Image (cartoon, rainbow, N blue to C red; front, side, top):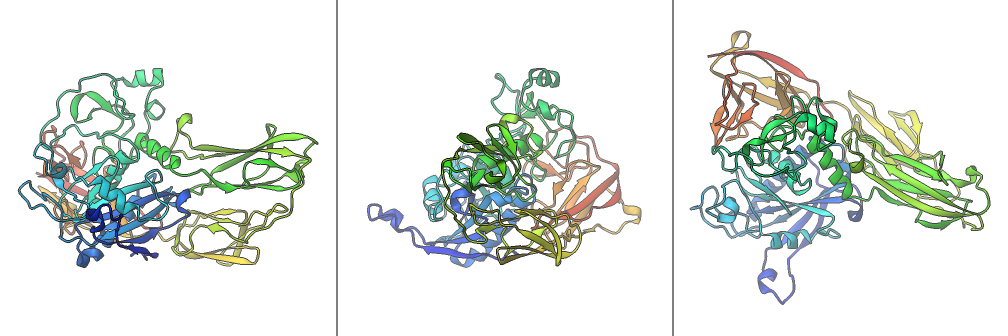
Length: 584
């Protein structure tokens, strides 16, 4: 379970005497879920709860934990979770639940955010569209000090076990549905990434029609053929033919934008089509780009301007969890050695004025479009007539948080003060054994628990390294040689974190129990089981979750099911497998 960092503030909403209705709104408490840096230098995810009474606040925090842990198990959130601060705003609701849940004739509840299904109780809408009062959501989000509409994303959770959510200015999801923790990243795909739905229906169980119109604005829908995509260098041409992160290959698959024919998407199934699968490369690239635009890639260092040639110059890049950012220093176009700092005294600068530039680039393989690659620069005028007064600074000004374990393959960093006369050494040790020096250290441990330390300027920081990937247990009904007739169930249990599985080498799919009961095992059948307008557990080649009107080839015969788990530190446990046979 997550150890909450503590309460930031308990604030009664009193938005001025001019609006008594607002002043009478229920009190709210802000809790740190994850803080990796200053609010102004992070993308701040603010999770609001609606319809949770005072007695139900523990339920709200459990829902928050489940949603956030699921988010960190999915790319690109997993690699860039250090770019996020996460805050939970708990509000004691006068009534439990939300409006029109699950039907239009259900009661309207008295809740602070006025969340409701059916697009806010609109008969012409669809049940699963879960909306929130934007003005109220923004007022409560404003309680997180320093956050603004520009540097935060609101995720509103409804106290409901009904499937539903929405994406737009804000993202919403039901808090307690078996699938709800997978709704959140899908809706953030809309709100943060500007991605579109890849469904071939709007109302469930009602087939979409034919697409009408020109080439879609959507980056992951097209009318072009694969050859046209390549020849014209359009949309996802750089990814064509590669194995999709969500299964299959990146290519051209018909259906999307709520229509069945006449428009094509990159993958057979992905996060924006079927909950449980990953973002495919096209969606992942867009999400990586959008996350990077929400933070300053260069968060600090020597201020831009005119400086002397007798000093050390600093730049402070962001620190993804999974890799280092590249820093390139040039003086009048000539490359200088250095990472987060460069010593101009060793550059033998000629008299006069010169231009020093630090270019920070994210080398992530998630981005192939040069125009989308996260990049930032900072420049200085170096004037040899300027004399730099000596300055120091604290031994450590920032680091990877030490309160929580780091993963076995994380990049851990330390930021020292910024003296003008030297580059303070940072010395790293793993289990007491020296392993290197520098501003960061890339772990490469896949087993066990370890202790990592960094020492600089008489200060030592210590991290617990959790490199033990979680184990996963699969429970299937007893059957000789795993031969089943008609159907079978599978329950996955992880020693830590979230289990996932895949069938016959298709995409990894998050395990959530069963749509109607998170505690029930997953049910496999030849064509799937229809629930609320979708068929789940389909063993045929169309994927695990399909629309009931899809023509499905029955999935009888032998199947190989692989399973594993991902823990909170990002460790992926060992993959196990079982071979089953399904007979009519």
